[in-house]
Image (cartoon, rainbow, N blue to C red):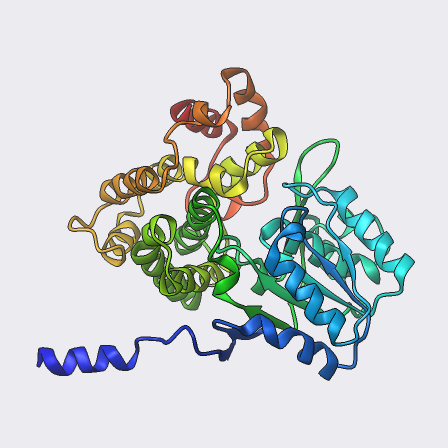
Length: 395
């Protein structure tokens, strides 16, 4: 019987060196070498003048220069916009839209992690929707104004964290108030994703750890979110499982398999969190907008505390997560202990003070967290006083 089970498992062991296609609903081309399909695809769609949106770090990397070379060799007129902040702001979007206007582009390719893909998606919105960008803020019903066609949009992820490549929203901060806004519409889905795990192979250990914990946070918060979406629940659980068996190896001794599984887990988290997010993201967002903390790092430090806040009343959900993570004890406390231990294994600190948060920041952070869009979907209500207490606990 055991032999038959092992034979079945072998059938489902994926060869990540083979390019495969699946849709959810975006067309996803997944596997080593998928990025080489970009130029033929752009040509097949009849485009000739793509705008590539990326960040200033990726713009200097070898694989990015190779993508540019391949597009140029294929006869495309390519324009690159990379002047974006680590935590993107409205002015980044306006600057990128100005490049689109000035250079007469006909399609848009987003290459990068969450920041680059959020800016790319917001530019896609802004091109044919010229009201103030935050007129389209989803929290004030702005999605109903996203009525015009948008440019053809292609995404290529280079990290395994946000899953923005398969998303339909962009998170952009106000330059002055630092409050984050969410721009949402099914029109903002990419037409196709080229998900090539080779583009993540040379990520530094810190970036791998922080973005990987971001993916885990997406899956956990989506599973706990109060909205009803059983399909997202199933995807979130599988995303957690993939992170649990792959993140440490991806950080310490990366392989094609571990990087591929993290890339899949990242996309699963982004698909799952259409159900909602929660307290951890509302704790993390102000750290990024006020102190310029890496978003994944902010989630990673806060997730044990946010999860502990949520245990009471939702013990059954935590038991299921513990089971999925392969823990011997199926409880909320076991999940929290696992999160602290995982942070230790991948080099993430346990305290906010270790990522430059100070006591004098906490009141402002709590006010921004309470105003954030994520926590209304948390399984239990979170007050401003709760946020202040959670920041104090994590400090």
